[in-house]
Image (cartoon, rainbow, N blue to C red):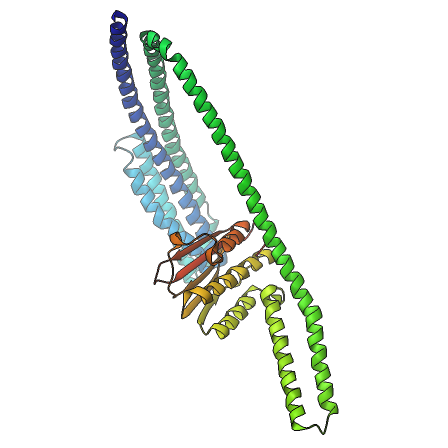
Length: 448
């Protein structure tokens, strides 16, 4: 009992000292971190101001040299941001400080630089070639930019020095807390020595159990990752096999069945030409046979296009999608509106886009009960966006199995090409499918 009482007293004292050290260190560190945050914002604002000035100068010079009004867009955007940067910086510095005086000088030089660029742009718009060229060839703009860089550098250096000092304060506080906690920890170890003797074995057993559980968890995670990778590879392989089989079947239909149907059609034509005085019944039969062969040839072509669209290789992605949309609209009676931009994609990515639209139209025809479909392909600098939207009955994505309606296959196709697929739908509100594909990527799977 005396040992227990002493241990409790020492534990309470150690806890009080530890709380005091922690609170003091937290208070000092919080203030230092707030200063660091303020210096960081200030430095970023100065850097942003300098960047916007450079953007404005670049845009204005581009317009002066080329006369292209598109260069005025970054110029106007940069000049609009400069005022906001200056206002933000003025609120960061108290008045009558060296940094505030430097900021005032920087503001004046920025205004002069803006006035010089505005004058040049206005003269260029007015067609005053000699005036703007004279302004462009003088060193006024360079002097302003040198002054802006110098004063911005001073502000950045001041903010950096403040950050360094605040970081030193945090480091100092951490050192004090470190030594204080070390002393309290030693006292706590002594106070709880008797308790630790009794609980050591339980603690070791618990640690061993936790280690075993962690090892088992890591093993399971490794197995899950390997199994997931294996399934992804299998799905990729199956898609590759499917595309190869489609291509092989399309070639066989085109070469073998196409040749047979064409030969049969030619034979019928020869029979019709040789049977000049043929009975009406024979003529009708031959005409019906000709129409049947034409229907078979058309069916063969449609099946080949579904298996491996030749229009994609011969006409390009945009024309292939237009043909696909027109044929689907004719078969289903659903009105389709297309907005297709020309995009630059490799053959595998084009086939991926084609399959996405094809699978989406198939799902709409089977399940959506729609009256209107919108297909859009939009070209962006770094990616291509494909959108298929309908006004059908929709569904609840969370309540649908991942493999339903071919969504799993579509998602795998897009992700294998390095993109992302999103499905947005609500009951009674239609469905919107958006696929984003990067322009420059190395696909890890079969394109489709």
